[in-house]
Image 1: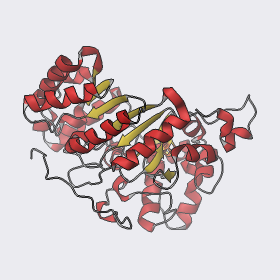
Image 2: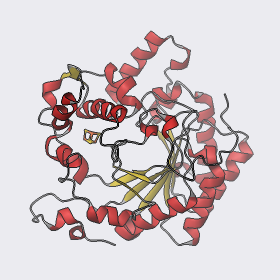
Image 3: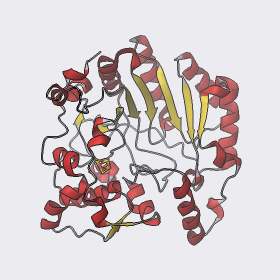
Length: 360
Ligand code: SF4
């Protein structure tokens, strides 16, 4: 396990100054592919999206986290929809167990792709035997646009029967008890339902959420974000997300690549990261996305007058950088910007994708 002062940035700080936290969680994104294409997705997951994390990449990331956080390392597997590729998921879990890594903390699903009841029970029993602590089922008005509530209810009931009630969380159970009926509504009514959903649940406006949902939220003048930096978002992030290709995102800041676990072990990335340095991370650290505006505007970016949050502004600027291929070592991958065809340059791409089990 590492110590705080093992990080270069921390080593130059005093005890009184805030320091970069040790990363204790890693969300392994098995795939960007998903049966749904929720409007509030932090990425751009959907049926057309791809990627499939190799076992080797998952284990590299998992081992790296264990080297950082020791027995406190908490790995969850997410997507996209991980149950689309259960065989790969199972292989990763088996390998992690064989190597004695920390048990899988949780698995996130939207319950869209389960077929027969016995098949689901069998998969859950397998995960139980692998030491899965919690199954998290995502459910809210945004998922409801794509997924039948009855299917989710049945999945929850079966999962609670196999794993026990305490190990199955629904985010959010209150919506399952009272679905909004959004699937049957016209676009105008859908937007009202989503607006309402935004007032009760928090949503980080990055990825598709920034482009589709943020305009529905309360807007603030651009000038308001002048003094909002990202120092705390970086230093206090408890962990990372790692995409199917090994790209590392800090906390929930998708679409900004800190490094890649295929090239650099995760613990080395943590040790070396100095979030206050560089003309991208350093600017965000000190000034937030407002600090990137000047350079973006010089290159032709035209900001809106209003944004829902600093992350909405950040995503808008990053979209511009992505389209112009600026900061191209950091801004990406295409999967976070709805550009699925940008999966090139990797000799293992495209991976062999099993036939779709998406039920539509
Ligand atoms: S503004 Fe950008 S970098 Fe800062 S917390 Fe939001 S998404 Fe992350």
